[in-house]
Figure 1 (cartoon, helix red, strand yellow):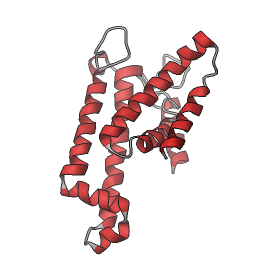
Figure 2 (cartoon, rainbow, N blue to C red):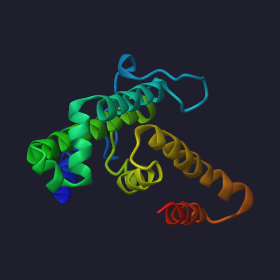
Figure 3 (cartoon, rainbow, N blue to C red):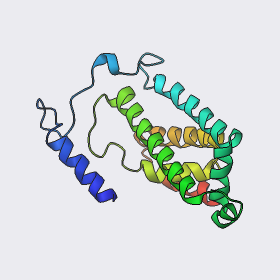
Length: 185
């Protein structure tokens, strides 16, 4: 249950894991030795970006070069046909959910270790919906997802500067993203 997870996280960050030096609900900052170093000074690009690209290549290899990947793709396309072919559908669904949860957790850890250096509730609001849009735009292919994620990341990060310089509402980016998805779908 997502609500239970959110409440548990909020309780941890406002209770036993809260930084005692601040009234803002957040954890203590990580040690500098645990931080992912930046790739370029004065930019928010860090070694986690390279790590994410390597993980995407690993996912590509897993899905298109292994038996497990073939089974996962088959179950995803048509579970009844996969079951008829002798593939254990339940095991593949559980394996896929475990892998996706591990990848989501790793993404959150990379965000904390490379950008914020602490955890605060609500730091990832909207990432779930954006990830669905990125997966659709990337046609559920790891290499397509990389390109779609770069497009959405550039649009989301450029939205604030666009609003500052041109007085254009920041929500126009959401409209553009929706139009892109509509035309792709």
